[in-house]
Length: 504
Image 1: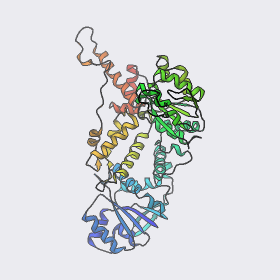
Image 2: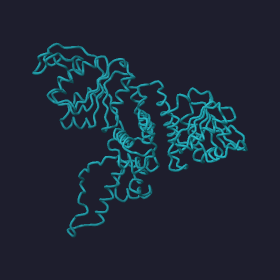
Image 3: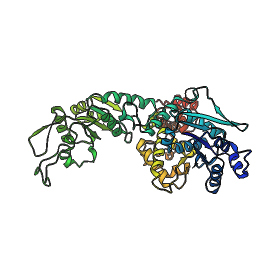
């Protein structure tokens, strides 16, 4: 099977309206050649215009199965919308494309932006397919040779790596190390972390995972389990902060019938349920000191004793603990046992916040949006959403204090609460939740009394330092991005850092 993918250009619509077989337009010329079995034809038009065009193609090329694909565009030169629209349309038909003997991307119909998009996608996202490029000239169909590796010579490495990862994820195929296939990343920060985690997965040592809320600690722990020697065993996640204090021992270690009021039957605890597998203790810093003592004994002796029983039970459990706190500081402050800390923290992995993952934000946005568009297909009236350039830029500007979880939830609200198929910056603004304002030391800077030693230059410096430090934190210490966040150039920002004594 040979498949053609093409936009429908103005010349094509004009040819179909004329019914002139002497000038069929690029698409008509290609399909009448007899070289293709199927054609995916993209356009931002709908309704009778498209139906008439498809009927005309059926008359001049009856042997070709044609499928029109609607891609909403604000402009035929809006690169972000064109790129996203093509990617979404082809991803939804990836099974057919992978079965094809050859896939042809047709560059002639449409705008230069559309032609550039075919080249980029053909050399990156869909490079695994047998893709060739076509153009039409003087009523002849020509194969276009691209005698250089566009992905290596023109596109930044981060785009190439990101698209490869999306392609792998979309296929449901993952290279060796399948447990890590659900982690979406391209940044060097995450690459280093995943490589460390991959090595640790082959060992049975306990691991402490630290990171802000929403960074994906359970996802990482699950990936380590799935690549470990106990992958066939259970993975039991426990949120230590969600268990009432009076039930913690029973929940973790189990209990026997009659152990306490309401214990009408013997029940195994989370630790015993994880026997032969991995126990994931999320928010371990929330565990009360009394439960910490019993957990330490369990880890040391490799046994558990159910509440109300004296019979020790042997267990073989690999423990991965996680926290959004600085657990070492919790030890110093007396809120966490030092001996348990060292028992859990044989190795520590630290998940970076989303703002510290260079280049991952766009990759996550696209992956989540693709997933939501696929999910939305259960509703027959649902139209796939695409991000306008302004919408994507507004997402880039947000601080994402809730990290990947906040991003995913925001995109869900954005997609399913908006009536627009082409999502705008205003749609994003409506989807973002208002964040609580934290009282800062410089509150009241505009209301200080005149006189009494007021120094305007010092006040200006205080305000400048405050916003520069916030921008640096939000950008993960990247000066260029911090400068963008406060509306100045990198050079100005660097000069101000020296002037006001700000360091990264």
